Image 1: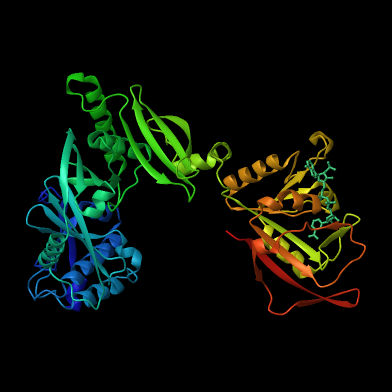
Image 2: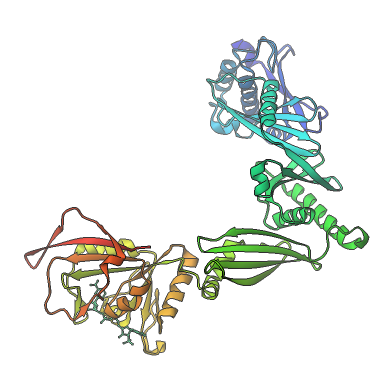
Length: 542
Ligand SMILES: NC(=O)c1ccc[n+]([C@@H]2O[C@H](COP(=O)([O-])OP(=O)(O)OC[C@H]3O[C@@H](n4cnc5c(N)ncnc54)[C@H](OP(=O)(O)O)[C@@H]3O)[C@@H](O)[C@H]2O)c1
């Protein structure tokens, strides 16, 4: 056997496709031309094999037959993929073939692009892949009317792999115990079919859930779960349309190639254009709309409608809403208008981009938390002569780690007390003086009010990510933001500087939950004298 395999030849035979699924036969023959094994290969795999040079192709063919062997290894001898001669020892032989032919060893990559296919009663197909040569993944697809459904199973070396027939049977039994997805409407344009199906299970009905599939001929190209609006046909066409605009958000179907994309795009445009042009058959008209709803966060919900206007524009109207109390709600409506191939913003993107406007309009509770950070002594002292009272290295580190990559808001005096602006943070400095009187430095912005400071901070977070705005002092600025703060990070130094001239504002401790950071006070020394401190994170009670 080991000698024989050295002399084996791989051939790809070109045969007509069966049941609409393109495949070719891959065969392995010995030096006398006897067939050892043959198996159908998916067309994508064939194309991949043909793109390789001879050595690589031989290795890939061997890897491919190893996958075929793997999934038929539990079949009774003589059935399945391999002849009796090949079965059982095939994997060992193929490995030997690869090593002795100087093709290296099998790696995961050798299996990555290989798909073995199998057929079952006409309109069903099973594709078998192996991510690494030992694990076997079997994907079953079945066509019911024009709707394809999919079922995936994974097997390891230790599992007994059922036959494809058994797997289909198992799937059918499982499907019968659940409620089925029913094809509800099919619209075709040329070869392209838009299959719209509803999930009749109760949970899905509550969610008004539907399934959209696009097939070209019998090939399933796109599959997506969608949420049905009041006009299903319009909805699903627009969903297709939008999906194209959104560059396909594809569910379980692996890939859409460029050619398929163009075919579908033409069909959608033709379908919509055709309907628009034939007013006596109008199912879809200019101004058609679909809508969906969701929430941005605990405070804000949205409803978005996409409307196709006759001149190929999609008008996306975002309505953000907030319940003020049980009887009253506030809403704001904003519009985005794009060409149909552009990308309409998602509600979240839209919300983020226009957050300041929307929040102001809705009076929304802040999405960004304001946190204050300070080091105080026992008498709440903060500073003296525009300097800190104490310098504790570990506390400086904590300050830096906490505030890094965030916006920090400070008063002009605190800014003046810094040797340099804080790096890797947006320094927002509040002053009552004209901004032009200040020297501009990178990473620093001057503002004249609290509102302006918050707006700069929110913009920074919207662009750079993050959700915390840090208030870093001094006394006037802490007092200004205390009513808005959700967190206070206070390092309390167990000492009192009687000469302190600025103090942290008083606050009602009962309104906050305090977390103590150290079990024991931390010790540090200052001018030969030991001082201790602890740190508290206070969170405003709900
Ligand atoms: N221990 C700590 O953790 C800590 C932290 C930070 C600071 N500090 C200390 O605190 C002291 C500084 O605090 P501070 O209270 O004197 O000064 P500050 O709060 O840092 O800055 C005050 C300045 O902010 C501007 N400002 C305040 N309210 C404003 C408003 N409503 N509109 C426009 N501008 C406004 C004014 O700038 P213009 O004068 O330019 O108009 C004002 O002079 C220093 O000793 C510093 O070392 C301690």
